[in-house]
Every structure is written in structure tokens, then in C-alpha cells.
Length: 307
Image (tube, rainbow, N blue to C red; front, side):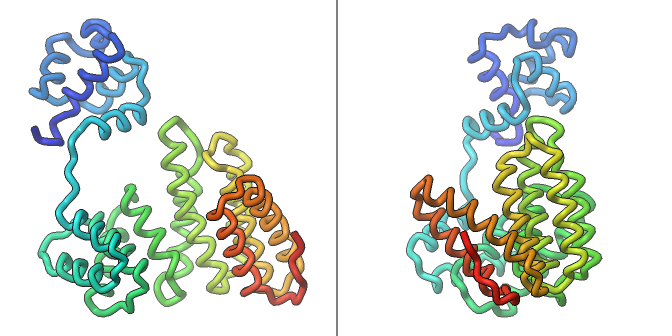
């Protein structure tokens, strides 16, 4: 069965598991006959109608999507399988060879281009024309769309993470920040998760402003972001996101030899240290060390950190 046409049959499984009858779910939304045809994957229905059917089953859209992707059989592409195998071997040359082979094909999905970009970064391989061209295509694809989707947000965040002044104008980065600020507020159950993805892109953009010397704008946008987080108590991982932005703002000040940066850095380090000691988790301890070193690298005040 084609994966694109399985929503009806998957919905039927969900309905039956929850013990709902056809007539109760159809209600006054659609006829029982149309619902039968939909569940047999013989016809399609509008998103608006489908959302009403989910509501009649007491199901949120996000819950349905999780259920759907658990049930439907989606095979990994051959390239993804090979790339995973290469990554498991820990051999950079094998990863590079497989990625170059894939990039020679005429038609490549954005998701695969992003996988190549991230895999190559993980190998610390020195980029060449083939990989530079892949990055260019990803960037052009993202910039050509009016509305960022899941892949575009993830890809843009990755590109901005390692970008310099020459790569993006400050006006473009600020437009991205404004877009993120508009899309982060929690409006419903699903927007909680989409919002966190926008938070990652926002933090990458704020860090871009900081490391490239746009200090006044970086300070302003960090404060905008902190205000937004304060106004959205239902945002997932809000406390962690809040301290991430405090850390970016600390670096803005530290790079300018302002003692406020030391004060903010101390707050971040104390928070990270409490988590590391409480959880006794090696990864949290490693993150704590990374944060400390990153503050030290940009600290122009000559004042030591205390935490």
C-alpha cells in the first residue's frame, strides 16, 4: 500500500482501538458512507474535516501523527541505510565517499542534502567544491521558500550556526529572528513542539549576532527573547531555553569588556553546575565544561568566574 494513502486505514485502527462507532465519529461532520470509504483508503477528505473527526475521537493532531508514524511502514532510503552504516564504523573517508556518490545523482531530496551536510560536519572533513555546492543548494532552497518547514528550519539553523558576516547580512538574520519570535508562542498542543524548533533557530541567530560583532542588536533581541519566554509558561524546556539566551547575552557583554557579562555567565554556570551535580550525568558535566570554556574564550574583562 502506498504510504500516502494510509491515513484512512490508520485512522480506522485508532478509532476501533478507542472503541468508537462509525456513526458516533462521523456525527454531523460527514456521512457514515463517506467515512467508510475514507477508512478503506478509497477517498480523501479535507484537513478541516479530518481534524473534526479526530476531535470526535478525543484525539489531538500530534497524538494522531505519533500513532500514524508508529503504524505505517516507512522504509529508510538506501542512502540513509548506507550512511548510517558508515557513521557507525567511525570512518570519515567512508562517509565522504558515500556522500559524494549520492551528490552525483540528478535529484536529491532536501532531507538527504541536510543529512550529508551534518554527517560531513561530524567527520571534520575539509570541505571541497562538491560539498560547498551542496551547502549552496540547501541555502538557495531555503531562501526561495516563503514559509519555513521542519527541514528548512533545521537546515537554516545548522547553516547559521557556522556562518560568518560574509555568509548572511545582518538584515537577513534579523528577519529570521523576527519570524522565530512570531512562531514561538504556544497557541496549542502542537505548537509547543514547533516552537522549540524555532527556539533552536532563534538561538543560532542570536549567537550569530554576538560572535560577529552586532552587539547592540544582539542585546536588544536577547532581551526580546527573554521577555517572550517569560510570557509563555507552557513553552517546553522553558527554563533551559531561558538560560541558553542568558548565556548568549553574557557573551555579548564579555566581548565588550562589560562586567555584566561576568555576572550573567556566573548565573548560567551555577545553573548548569546544579544540574550536573544533581543528575551526576557525564553529558551534563561535559556541557558544563563546554560552557565554561566558551565564556573564558570571549571574556575580555579579566575577572574570573565564580560558581
